[in-house]
Length: 136
Image (tube, rainbow, N blue to C red; front, side, top):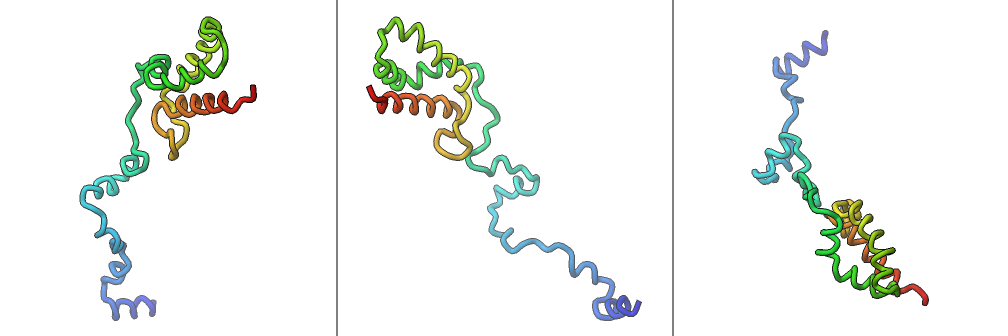
């Protein structure tokens, strides 16, 4: 009771407002266009890599592989050492099935091959390099 009286005498009735949250000094350095994202706690637009609402899911893995990974497919086909008909019968279905599974997935969260198609690209690069270094 004595402490309360001293607080009232020193600070008046505004004692609680002295300890109210004040804005951090760094807040004035935040650009105005970013403030709505911070105030609404919408952090997904502020991260790197930038958040994407979705991927083009109607693109098939086979199409994606044949159009964007053509050089790697040719390198793998040339390195594997099978005749063309055997390559098409045994190896191509494996590549197509893997492409259907992985063509929209990233290979990592924040490193290289982090975007859509990253896992397919990374896997095919690893396969092509593996055939290069394979002892014959």
